[in-house]
Length: 264
Length: 172
Image (tube, rainbow over all chains, first blue to last red; front, side):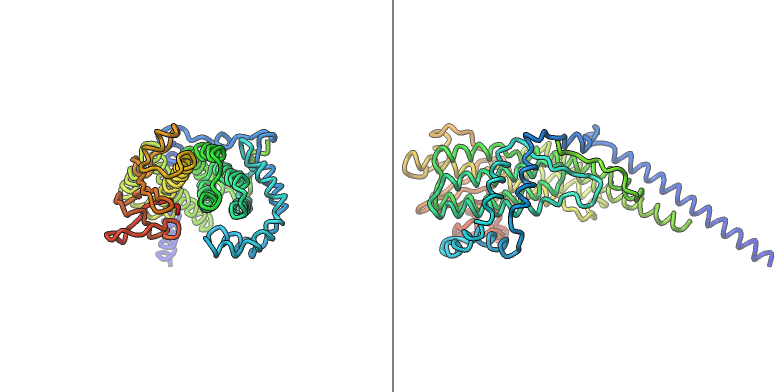
């Protein structure tokens, strides 16, 4: 009995010691991991999310107009598929969809006006809380508007209106650039998707209603301003900053006060 | 005690996962900053991934991100060339024989191929042209890309292999 009790006590103590040992090893590993996390790619400091995504004055912020545009377009899958097919198809297949696309885009009129205005603005910063999981609710809406803008550009080209088509192409590319201003990898991937959407309309426009010299020059200027390298580097810095914050946020489950960025 | 330990270990594994993810982010960052071409950047990322067992087990495929980045940069560059070719056609009545003619005539500063760092390849076709990057395999596949046949539209040359990966813009 004594032996048994002693053994039980010893085994319990050894379990406690093992657990404490494990915990202290784990603590050391966490400490080391956090130390490694703190260094930037070249050993320097990682910029904070607030530095990477500084507030933008309302007068320069395209996001506020995009948010208004989100309220004004019909959100249904059939329209979305119709526009997507129209952008992708070529020749007679695309022309066959023109009446349906024209009817569908009439519902987008006000939203597209806002998109064109927004796209001409210098910066874009959506109000965002970096500490919630639902960080990017607006990307789906932006893709939808990119599709509508590209479809409208193609429709204008097929209707013999090259200048309007060029204006819409320009809006599509500038909107893609705006999306890439968020310092996250998901934002640059959505930017690439929107470049792909606008790019398909670009080919149709060039083939069916080539823009004037002046419009070609303007479009070239817009494309030249799309610096994907800068966007990717900013996104990687943002991901590094987010990866610092992520493990901490899981250990303290209570939501700490949200650090809202943007809004101007 | 058990709950604390398991919670702590969960946090630890997540921290280590993020550390590995972070190492890959740094590798991509360095590669993009240091490399002049997409090919050099992707090679550098691949070599760093080989050196780190943990990093390769992370789901996020940052090499895929790098490739996508350079491919979209290439598409933007091709679109700029297409606009220049259109302006050239408007001024002269036909598309040029070579890309050098475009720069000389228009005076526009036009981009190189972001993937190879060299010039784009260009061929006139009846009623149009095809302009393209030779892509990641560094082989001229005649503007053909097996993933994107719809966009390319160029007839494949007889010797085109299974890995054709040119990135092209064709008109006409």
